[in-house]
Length: 304
Image 1 (tube, rainbow, N blue to C red):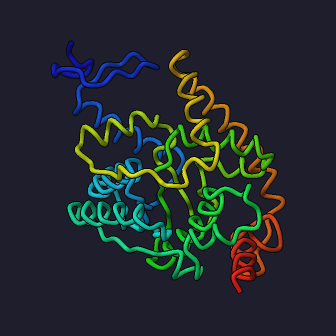
Image 2 (image 1 turned 135 degrees about the vertical axis):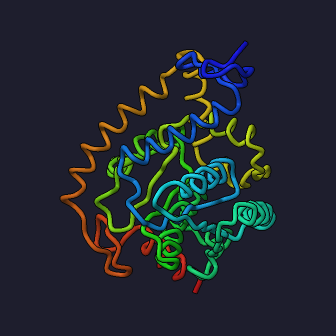
C-alpha cells in the first residue's frame, strides 16, 4: 500500500486516525507536530538557549535530534545536558551513547552528577532513605529536577526541554491522583511561559509508540539496559493499563490527555495563590522549604 501523503510504501499506521505513512512522511509529521506544540504553548522565545536534557533513552535522543534540526531554521540555540545519578553499569552505557550522539550532531554536551551536586549518589541516597515505601523513582525524580535546574543555569539556558511524551503525562497524572498529591497536577500545564526558568515538554502531545518508531526509522541508538530500580514504583503497571485501553479503544489516550490539560490549568491557577520561596535555595515552592532541599537535608543528616 502507498503512503497517504506520497507514493512511497507505508511504514507506519496511526490507529487513532487511520493515517498511513511512509518512513519519511512519518518523520516529517513528528517534526511538524513537535514544532506546532512548541508554538501553541509558547515554549521557546526568540534567540533563547534551550538545554535539552538527554538521558540516553529513545525519547530524549529523539528530542535532541528534532530540536537540533529545528534550531537550524528557527531562532533558538540548543545545548545538551545529562545527569549522572551514579548507578553503576546502567548509567555508563547511557553516557557513552549520549556523548557519541551529541558528537555526531555537533551539539555541545555537559554532564552533571548527583555526587557533585548533592554529595550523594542515588544508590547512597537509597541506602539512607527513612521509609522503604519511598520509591527510588520518587527520590531520583526529585534530585533530577534540581540537577537539571542547576545545569540550565550553569550553561546560561532560558529553557529546559525534556523528552516526556503523552504517555508519560497520563501515567504521571494517575500516579499523582493515586498518591493524593493533587497540587502536582497543576504542574502539568504545558504552557510554562510565566516561569523564570521554563521546563518544556515538546513531545507532550505525541504517543510513546510514535517516538519509538521515530527513533527506529531514523537509526537513533538508545540505551537498551533498563534502570535496575524501574519496578519499585507503579509506573510500569499504569503504562500497561493505558496501553491495554488504547488497544481496545483507539484514541482514548488523546481524549484523556485533553481532559488532563483542562484540569491542570484549573489547579495551576489555584496553586499560584500558594506560591512561596524556599528558605534554603530561593526556588519557588508551596512551603517554607522545597521538596528537594527537605529531602537532601534529611539524607545528609542521616549520613552524618
